[in-house]
Amino acid sequence: MLAVEEIHSYYGLSHVLFGVSLSVGEGGITCLLGRNGAGKTTVLRSVAGLTRVRSGRVVFRGETITNTPVHRLVRLGISFVPDNRRIFPDLTVQDNLAVAWAGRPPGAAWTIPMVYGLFPALAPLAGRPGGCLSGGEQQMLSIARALLGSPRLLILDEPTEGLAPLVVRELEDQIRRLKDMGVNILMAEQNLKTALRLSDYCYVLDRGRVRCHGTVAELGRDPEIRTRYLSV
Ligand SMILES: Nc1ncnc2c1ncn2[C@@H]1O[C@H](COP(=O)(O)OP(=O)(O)OP(=O)(O)O)[C@@H](O)[C@H]1O
Ligand SMILES: [Mg+2]
Image (cartoon, rainbow, N blue to C red):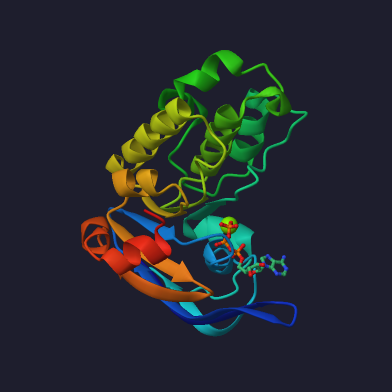
């Protein structure tokens, strides 16, 4: 459903992605792995129209979407949850959801009760300001907001970063449930255990290039990949 073809991206003059190609098939979770600074966020931002792609292209369901602004991507069915969990800290949980609901594209199927159903922990917090939530609750709220756009492709940048192990497991269950509901997921994940538990297919990035890709089982069998790129 998504194909990234030989993209090169820059921050100013600094060349960060060097011909990255990857694809996301229908019905699964695709993980980007790699150490700090490998380029995971930049790949996701390049797909989401937030970092300019200088050459190469991004194709979504047959349509070329390279450098399409993020609000148009939402209409096409792509939602991006950045690693800084962009929620409105002064608005309540309910109002954070209401704003996302008001901005939903035509025909969006997800409703606010549905996202409370997926994240029951948010329901009793409906009246609490977003800024007063725990890290895990904020992550759930930012995914919930993205879901109100009824994405076909949900892009998550390090959703488990900084969360306590129990919260990580809860979030993993919810991400798995989303996959079972037919939401395709492309995520960056430094937590190898989470990636192992969730992903159907992985790409390992290193210094702006794809070093290798395969199923978790395939990658885990290669001792060099394990030690050099996966830190296990
Ligand atoms: N805003 C920026 N301006 C300049 N260089 C940047 C910027 N953001 C990232 N970079 C550089 O781009 C490269 C890739 O960074 P990126 O954030 O994509 O890596 P990452 O794999 O997501 O890392 P992390 O695990 O730390 O999130 C790094 O060398 C980084 O220093
Ligand atoms: Mg990153």
